[in-house]
Image (cartoon, rainbow, N blue to C red; front, side, top):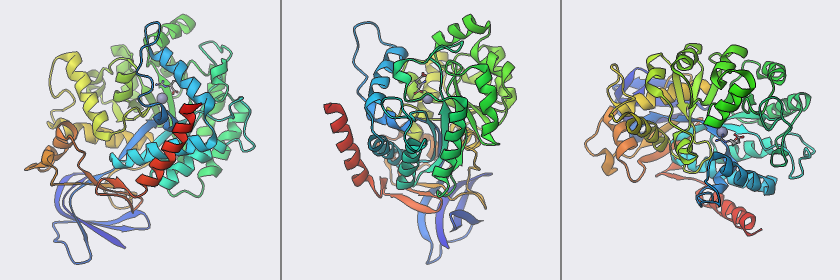
Length: 452
Ligand code: NGQ
Ligand code: ZN
């Protein structure tokens, strides 16, 4: 039994003072409020539930800052993807593991306690499966385990270069499986995470570009009740190509042809009509918003107000991992709305006037739903906890919701102090316990990769 005491903590029904959490076997065994700290309690000022990072491609952390150079023609998502494919073509399993571990350490230091890894690089550089079809899924799981982050592994089905079942291109050879081989991959992925506490496995048809309707129907049963994630309507070109292929826009097509419900996460969902927005919100599916990456790739701005008014659920993901931060994603989400609408406090609601609190509550609930877990500081839930440093100048004099506003909008240096995942402390004073060895491994692999 391990006991934490917080001067204030955000519980499912709001902020409470003098909170003691007892942790046992990785879970929260009891929550007491209005109690003074006793000798054996580990004392902290501010306690928050850890957020889920619902969409990551861990290996892309290795490309951060390397695609910000203008090419010969005008740059776009599609020219970025060419560079990404070239990077993918060179990575060994050791590279994947070291780069992914670095990304996960940064996530933990930034206040994320679980990651949804949308994992699609499966085969060797020639496109031949490894002896173990889940070799690279195993490397992702090893990186998660080494860092301590909770893992929801989403092995990806990818088979085509475009709508209508177009043959995959060379750059995609490491991703491609038949339906049967994908079923083997999902089963092997379940085995790869079997020893890891709290791991969840879902499935992920990559995008409507990469899967045919028949293939989609064939793989959906493999989810077996777990989460189902798909990229959708991220780029205008994808919308145009989908209309040319089917007569429908991508979100509309998906809602018409797939059993979208609460177990789904529609990643990006950037380009929707008001009708699609209302229809998607009504399914209970989560919008997987990746505001920092969407800005970096020039995707567009999610139309949040009508989606939230219709009761739509959202969570955030660091996607390309160009910059990893829970507060950064939430701030970018709000600021993109402000810039588009020339208004302030767009994500706040009549019920929750603090923008930081509304963003945090939304991302906590939507992120947990999308990753197939329960999120929050409540009895029986995983002990995924973040403490903030009350001495950070951005939090001076702040209490309750103003703490979240100060963290998200006003902190130059992150106030994230300690982080626990499944009851194990993995970050102290804002630093991950293995930060140096993981960074050294990352540096070594990256220097070798980039020297080639
Ligand atoms: C991905 N990234 O899977 O990493 C994609 C690029 C694709 C984003 N969509 C590949 N941001 O969409 O074909
Ligand atoms: Zn993605």
